[in-house]
Image 1 (tube, rainbow, N blue to C red):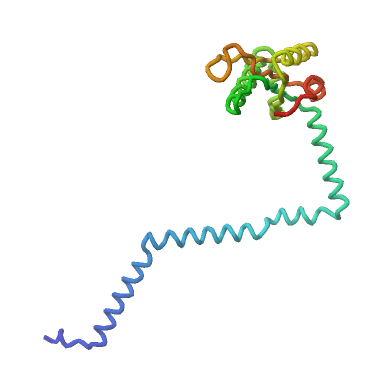
Image 2: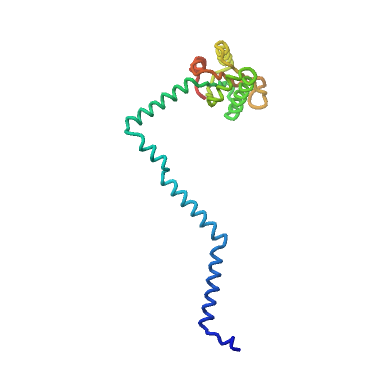
Length: 202
């Protein structure tokens, strides 16, 4: 009987404690936690982007004056030019008179590049290895017709450049056996340019 005579202020304080506990439990629900985590991650990322790394600041201080920066840029340009001159190039020559669509041209160029690759695997592995080390650069140009393609192939063969011609199977757009793309090289920029330098880029 004396249990029922509790102080009303004690009862109200216990209710408040239960409500506070319920409020905390509700605030730690997963659906409330994930957005806060995402916002914190984005904020941290923004802070990282606005503050450059220490190494970057040191490198900037180490470079004295504008004249030296300009000379460094010109040296880099010279090095890039030398690398381009020493690079091995491949040129893919596409016939214009066949009026192939862009998708057809892309697939025929892929045939030419992979065909040349497989031939080099069998016959000139050292050349293939050097070309791979230099990034296998390719340029796509156009020629007027089959006669011009034949002349280009003969000229490339005469100076020792590897060549590969794609003869189409004739399933789409062109008749079977049509020579669609000629691959010339890899070879030095000077030697490849001597054959294809005057041709128009695709």
